[in-house]
Image (cartoon, rainbow, N blue to C red; front, top):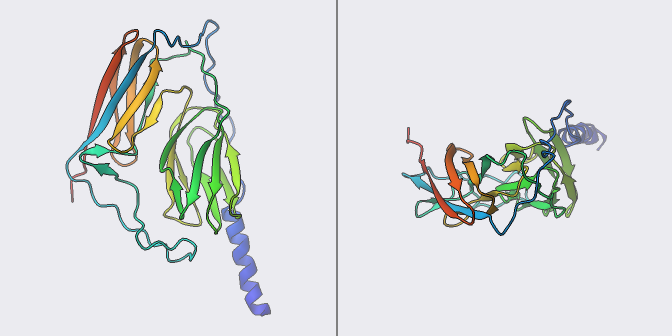
Length: 257
């Protein structure tokens, strides 16, 4: 029994170190400040930008995930969520206004958290967006230990253990960044992607590959569509007052080797 304990204790220390506190970075940039004459968007004159994200060609099948190493996670039918498409419409694409707003407008930061859940030993949703300064609430809904490891390039990296079922931790980001990869160091197949922006004009495509950016002020904008494997595309849109514009992005499936 004592001999077994000598092996168990070091293993627990390794896990605790892997899933413990965040790794600190210095000189973390802040979000750009609004101009002195910045104003709120007038909904009476704002327009809408909507559209669809398509994919040409045959996407590769998502590889199966082997969860047997953790009995609490065992799902024999689990697959990765890299490519999700139906009838040529691509899901899990982050679409947002990349440029054109400048610092001319004031946007209130939502106090309501955006939820990233760990359920069935997968992140839900796989792709999501959050505002700078808005809480990102990460929840462990599983009866096993997870850790949340965010790996940004601009914001501060963190790595937080969640050993208790129902545990909730809130995090905020101080600068825009598209995209931030998340992973779990305990379950190597778990991954998610979070887009951080300073404004409300972002969306993630779901069934049908559609997106909507509502109440956008008149102006000329760069719209970007980002996919974790197929890359990013941009389009320029000029929107007049009360105008509605549609944009279509078309990605090409990777060529089979």
